[in-house]
Structures are given as C-alpha cells and as structure tokens.
View: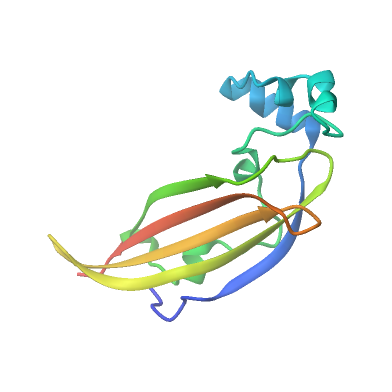
Length: 146
C-alpha cells in the first residue's frame, strides 16, 4: 500500500439519482418511509420528488471515479475491505445531480497480532449542487505486509 496516498482526492463527479431506480432500490431493501415511497408525502414536506433511500448513492457506479484500492496501490492478493462507516447528513434528492468527491483520509502501517499490516481509509461525500453534503461513506482497507 502506498503510505503517501493520504490527502489525495478526486472529483467531484456528477451522479444523477434516478427516481425510478431509487424506488426499485427502496422496494428491494424494504424501505417504507413515506418521504421515499409517496409523492404526496414528499411534496407536503417540501421536496420536489420522493427522496432516495439514504444508502442509495453508494449503490451507484460513479463514472470516472478511480477504484480506491488502485489509488492506494494495494496488492489485491493481500488486501481486504475491512468495513464501511456511513454518516447521513441530509436528504438524498432524486432527479437532480449529486456530486461525488473522494479523498484518502489516511494510509499507515500498524503492527498487528500476526504481523505488519497497512491500513487505508477513504471517504466519499455526495453533495447537492449547492455543496450541501447529503451523505458520507468511509471505507477501510487492510493489506497484509508480512
């Protein structure tokens, strides 16, 4: 893993949250929130259209966005995705572009129980056209060095 990757960033890249796909996603994962499922409830709450489920942006492929393990120069045969953390800041609108921006928060070595590992953490933010962040995701990768 490239331990000098900390601070690298890329984007923003546009992502349009398609309302139909967001509704399909909501159905699949069992979301019953009226702001997501009901046009009238969303309008009454001041939204132009039903909202997307909060995790929906992370299910989208962001065209042009590099693959994080490649940015970290992690060896695929020694690297695992250790987990995701999500922070939901505001509603995720549908039918308008969101902007995805990713940065490497940190990359460092650590002495584990079974040897040295490298840990890389990347954060992706999705914001609306005014720069208001809707949601953030942190992904942690661990590469075995020994």
